[in-house]
Image 1 (cartoon, rainbow, N blue to C red):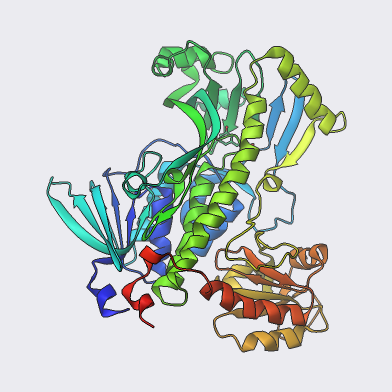
Image 2 (cartoon, rainbow, N blue to C red):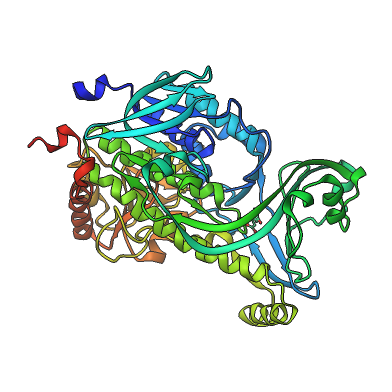
Length: 538
Ligand SMILES: O=C(O)/C=C/c1cccc(O)c1
């Protein structure tokens, strides 16, 4: 750390201690960065907003050492069945089959207040992370090497703190985004819905559908979601003339729930009216100020990706901030954050919108045409999709510049045999830059020797169980062998956030990739106003 950096109050100021801010603070804490995280509110919001997460996110939480602490509040997500105008099944969205590609149940539901409390506990367990609650951000002023933040303490006193970077995880109405002058683009979706969470009594649970469902009835589209334990969620489209605030009233909510429950069947946990909309920030950074989570994007909930998107932001950004703060990369690497995440958000939101538009269809004739089209897409049977095939890869940013199989996709996580037990790959190899080599390749040993010249990159060869190759990891389910075969490659370079930087068909391809990592991490043009004093000194 330079003297200038050491003189600052912290390396990163995280504004907002919801899931995105808490994960960012925890990751920064683990990497040794002095982090101050503030939130306007003094407590975890005690009602569930997000309900779904997926294996990519759980993998990061497991990497952080949180799996045991949060598992009591997480359950597998059931399939979602979509029903058409006449109540017929038109589509089924499920998860990919076993063996699971990342080693975990691919889609899960969770209880947000409990998980969020664990995320906060984890972040504040690092001596270099300080959380200040009841603290409001009033202003930010950027200098070449720092940002000065004006804060209002819980006692009403103003004070200023300095940080090398500021990360706005402060939600849809983000103060950070507004102060930084970062605009939102409208991705054109705007529908009024009522979200109702119920803790259902034990005896009423069996009378409810045993699968999550989308009732695509043009008279009143409704989503039904099976949450953990006795938590059930209904998302109910509001009709023209219905006032959101009025519809939140318990007497109106129970009328809407009448096809499923009576007030004796459970306790209303939350009823909140929202406009489901789709927005993305045009720019995700202004100099040393960056935004993440709902501050940078909002999307309709129809495949439960809202919180996942925020945590993808955090896990994408933090390793890049780490490289920049440690001088491994220039500040220009941070530009790849917005490039990668904005494209991903736009592409995924487009897919969510398409699903949402078909669910929200209010014209009966159009809804019948939709049903016929979806059934035709499924060759006359209900269409079958997996949630995982809906999630796009990264397409541009800190990736190899050459087209190659699997670039920008999530690298799988096979189970590795260790002393009579099976452990997940990340636990064995760690989560930095990694090269994974197909141990069945004749060139495996040579490829490992190429990697040995790169101390910043770890390397391992993996073989199927029983192959008996010395110095190779043995996987127990064939997940990785299958992946190498499917993509026709023998090695993959994997980033700290588990996205594939690039793949190689042979040893010479791997040599090229290893050289390219260095270039892509360094050859990123810093923006004029965001270079620190140190970086501008030749
Ligand atoms: O993945 C699905 O099938 C549905 C997920 C979901 C999650 C939250 C809210 C929704 O309307 C759908």
